[in-house]
Length: 488
Image 1: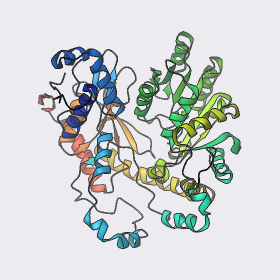
Image 2: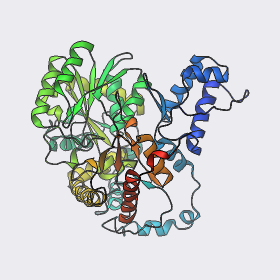
Image 3: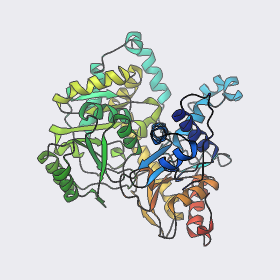
Image 4: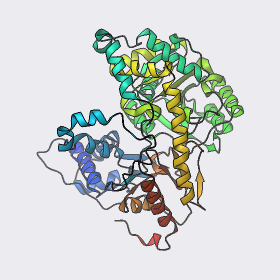
């Protein structure tokens, strides 16, 4: 347990909020590091002279901010500091070069090298980012020209006026076309636009789950699902997995004994384990969902990186499946465009949830994506990403020889299982101290925490930085005095 106590100011507002902000500051300053365990509720309450309820509320606030996660029976742990990184980026001062050279930046937008690994930013002083699964935007094609075409041809009313939460008809048709390419029904009436897949998750859960309901997921899952469980007050439980994903017998046993309301799954290129479920396994899972009247929320964000994967699980149980996809990984996360594909009788509730959370999705952004879907640009970008991921993976695998690695040939991350003598939290901390950011298994775990970590390699622009970062990880894994580091 970390020896850490927040400093409170009597005039500084509610105590629970002061504690949460003290946690944020300690994380940002590096006093609290990923994997550190916070004091127990009772111990911290005693040290500060407050109630246990106050500590519980403060830890919940810190969890809402993306700083920590609580595990029943294990305590509250500091998460990898993704949100704090984003906060710093959002509040950083504008560089003078940016304000003085806007016209130069606009002119240079068309001259991006085809291969970002050849851009040569080896002298970038920042840490090597293997933490965030944020592939670079496509480096071929011209997104800027496509956006200018949208501005020049789309009516001002369609660009800036309030629209229905259902979206504009031709945009829905384009999103339905994309869903059809995945094997789903391409009826536009079954599709709704969302502000990305994460928004789609929120909308789907708002429409299908009530506070106190049980939602199932893989025992390692997308971390934002845990945040949504806290926010929406539903219970979350992980289902045992094997090399393909969720084990049918384990799922059926949980359905039979615990009456879950819904299940969130990523059957294709699971994050973080890289697993893709076979078609036979999907058929078996679909039968269980149908038998126990369980709603499926399927995340297909990485489907495009595995074109040989079976059709989405939703294709095998379409009457109770909500399928989510988007362009955050294939075009760029800043667009915030995705879609929901669902049964007709669910569309009304889902549309109401969209209206309640963001009223509508930006028409300009959806128009840009719609045109890229219909003119084939999106398909070309997806193919480019598969080639790019394969090039990057080759660098990683050439360096991390002899380690227990799960990977897919055209995926942007790997899963590294650690030997018993290496503590995951300590490795992540030591890597950060050596300028390499990693994500420990703890951030994904809903239940038992395995010994492992995720390493993403899509965000870096330089092949040399990728190689240097992986060499650092390899050196730490092989270091004979690794276990001598003391964490206070």
